[in-house]
Amino acid sequence: MDFTFTEEQQAAVEAAKAVFSSVTPDSVPSPALTAGAVAEDFDRVLWRKLAESDLLGLSLDPQYGGSGLDPLALCLVLRECGRVLARVPLLESSATALAVQRYGGAELRTAVLPRAVGGELVLTTASSGRTGHGPAELAVQARRNGDGWVLDGVQTAVPWAHGADQVLIPAHTGEGRTILALVPRDHEGVALDEQISTSGERLAEIRLDGVRLADREVLAADGAWEWLRDLLTTGTCALGLGLGSAVLDLTSSYVSEREQFGFPLASFQAVAVQTADRYIDLRAMEATLWQAAWRLSLTEERPTASGALPIAGDVAVAKIWATEGLRRVVQTAQHLHGGFGAVTDYPLHRYHAWGKQLELSLGSAAAHEEALGELLAAHPLG
Image (cartoon, rainbow, N blue to C red; front, top):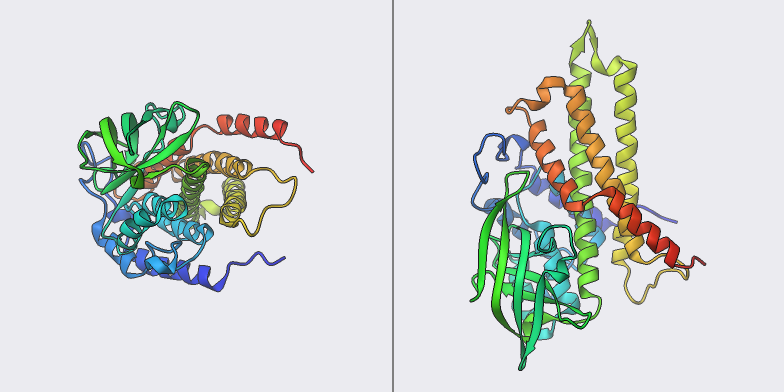
């Protein structure tokens, strides 16, 4: 078996590193220094650079201007995005575009995807539901109205919604089905209320009151929401891996240079053991992430082996490690930095805030363990 990444995937990583080299954590707005949102909009300059480097259409088909790579390549780029705390909706816009490509009609794909690749059209997805705890698809109701749909409900904590042009919103039909509706931000019947994330970024509570959409603006295929939800979760794990890797690098550098009693902190056994444990956490996060991303990248022509767990199992394992591992990495970094970790002209406090936001986005590890247990109990392994 060859577990190395392909040349195309490695080229995407190098392109991402080149683009993100212009971003330094010290330049990222700090929630500790800003009352309210840290900025009105995401980093548009960086967004243009991503478009110019063909990274916004990384996993889209060449017919729409994309590179035709798989979700695994997207996760590799998201890892680099997380390393530098890049303030761009790369995950949300890419995942939404992929869902449109996979489940949307020809007219919608033609209207949306080329513009998304060029960075002209910014997309995001509502995946938190009404409270952030219940299933997101139950927060909005969709009902048939002639040859279209009418949507009513509320979605909370929608990332980058104030700067996005369109929002993909899951909704239930009342018949046990979930559809995905691509709603323009300024559509009649749509209202946005500002919310602030732990990292200081603007989120939005989106209220839909009798929002009317045509059939072509709706993804009604079975399994579309489940696939998109798994992709968003796996991408969030990739962001967490990049952030955690950067935090461990920062910590290793600090304890190697900082001296106590005339010796570097790194020479003390207790410090070495803690950093080694966090390295193990990151390797586990990495292994489970790539497993989930690989499963997402499989096509219908390459089915999984008989008896294998559904992809939801791999995503649950990745979530468990990302949630717990990222928390431990950031907490250990703060502990080993001492009071210096709270100094606002040092980047660790920014990583701390972003890490906590990603942890909250992924949800409780205990809940993921329970879901995995139920899946294992219900699925016969061959």
